Image (cartoon, rainbow, N blue to C red; front, side, top):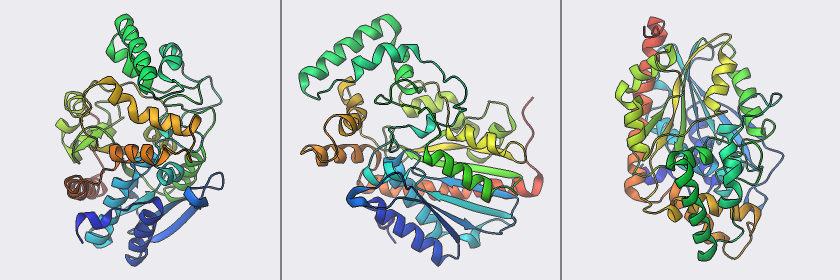
Length: 381
């Protein structure tokens, strides 16, 4: 099959391709329905899992996609390609692979990054019984960045106010305040929620059920979005020098995890993070399993040469959710713009996603095979 054959036009088609491939390959499949939301045309929404390899494997690769909804197309295609072109026969002895398809099925189905509650799942995995992290600079920015109109005049006023903010605080402070996560404005950017989302609770159920016996767990969480054409960016959230970081460096190369490499490929210094799924899963597994891995980005968007273009896609999502609505006359065009950022239909992007995704699987699974035999790596001195 050509690379384009693994890509779908809709969440429903992506799910069908994944499940058909998984069942044909003999996977143990399970489905979890999100009863709190529907997709376009009242489509039912599911997170699906597929287990490949020994049922009692103590070394497992946990592989997720669609954490940020609209970003799910690349990860789904890579998963289906691995099943069809590699499959369980290529797993190292004693190693299993657990795929979790469409962590955030609402976002995947509608082509949006957040959940049905506008929550960024990668800011939602923290203890909501404790006070949420503060983000005082976002408080200053929220009204500036959330105009009720996308007309040129409103956007220009937003940019002018944003420029004044940068004069006071600096460019990175702006990017960090927007992206690090905030817990006070449900209609704002990167809202982390005030309670665990359905997708958060479902991941916890899956990890508790499927990985209770595991002692060594690798992790790939497929994402997309940064400017590029299918190249991989490895975002490892383990502390540098820790055992988890050293494992990831062994699998993918120390240079790939170097902040200089990551920042250069990302296009700017990476913002602070809170409440990531990576840390949530790491905490769940800590009592009985070692853990290492990364959120792995397929670069996808075209270059944006000004601030208005850089902000347009998140502004479109906010407009669709809170101002115009999903059935507004402008909505089809806006959904398409968002799709083009996260899952472009360029043949070169699709070919690179499949090639680089399969190479990443090969390197990661080889590393897990070594880990299963050798007992892992010690943290650096």
